[in-house]
Length: 152
Length: 448
Image 1 (cartoon, each protein chain N blue to C red):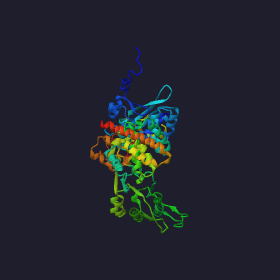
Image 2 (tube, helix red, strand yellow; image 1 turned 120 degrees about the horizontal axis):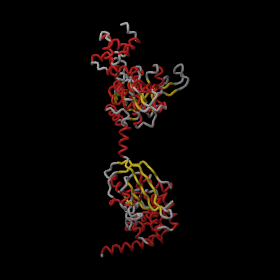
Image 3 (tube, each protein chain N blue to C red; image 1 turned 90 degrees about the vertical axis):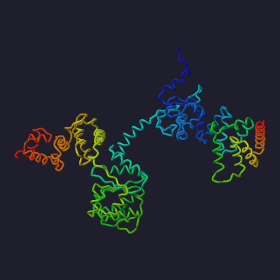
Image 4 (cartoon, each protein chain N blue to C red; image 1 turned 60 degrees about the vertical axis):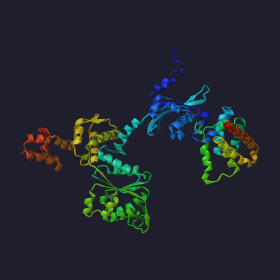
């Protein structure tokens, strides 16, 4: 089992198979952020939302741009498809704080403002309130500075 | 001067006839050789750095990636039959090889896939195998190709088929091919020869019976139609079916319903009917032996299988096929037939069609000791009849041969025509005077 095989499962969207291999690779301490970025998506896809948020919080705290600057094509990011599936999930309206958290995390890979929008809606999740607040503050800061740069 | 590793990699890869690309551990293309460019119609500069799945866009990229196989099994992949897509959208049959590239610690860091374009072979295979041997039917003649086309065109249809053709032309094989290409191919395929059962028994065979329906009906029994439910039934020699039974068959065709013999419960089935006959059904209709309404119900898709004499160009293919078949069956190492024997086979009119040709080759096999079938090993009827065609006789002189089948009549008629001049008769018959004398003696014609 190797990171390459996990990457293979990731690009063929076999997230359940990728998860245990990525986890083992993290234990070995290899290229952690690159793997963690993918593992967040895998965790969300297989329903391990708390595990996904723990990694998400860690990366946003250290290097949020590594997620924000993701290119859907060149990074083969599945988030746009996943968001589409999630938002159109058999016509069910997205209403629970947990759903908002999922969308907030996924949107950070492609749309910063929408990510903030959904993460704020997820604040009702008491277990993650403090961490969420911290993430939102950081993302708003980046959003403001990026707009400021744009104005200049 | 030593060649340093890596310095000439691009030159080496571009010199290969096989398409080849490598990927890194993220499955982004790192190298893409000239043959790959040519086979796929893609420029390497357009694909370097892109994910291989975005470039190749095949199902295999998601379900059955060769590099994934190697990563999972630890074994390299060889000659994996697959399909790639040319830039134009055309599918290309290829054979893939896959291997994983590892670093000094044995950790996978990339992969290499090479592929051979097999599309030319595929085309040859299709034209030689599929079209000259269509589901076991041998024939390249235009009329046979038209039948294959028709079978493929009606593959999705549930309509009835009526196959007509002389005895021995392969009507049952056509029925098999129709069934195998149809959407009912995985459902029951029941065959029945309508001529082998007496009328009462045929009803029981087709529709079943209940216990006590007749003397031998000791228990309930399903008929062929029930057994074929959801699938196909092949009614061979349909013109032999008694008129009363034709009425019942018509009802199955129209409504899908019938009753078992001795029972009043109406049963319903969904069965596609393929019927065949060697008789001229129109003549049978005119003679009142075949119902017109049934004919039109059955004849939705008519197929006429031509006699072998009308597609002589298929004789060599059939001969080769039967030689292979009997070599396999008998274990004899007979490989071919000589030109003279083939000429005889080509000239013979084959009244018994493909079945007779098969029997002829079987006969020759039994008599042949070496690796080649010679003309002398063919059955006498084939040799003699053909000799008449070779005799150089005029059309009018050939006529008696067509009209009379026995050797005796042929020799006697020829002798009568030339006023018993044996030299002239031998010349017309295409045989030596001694042979003619021997045959005349055999048939008691010497006194004449």
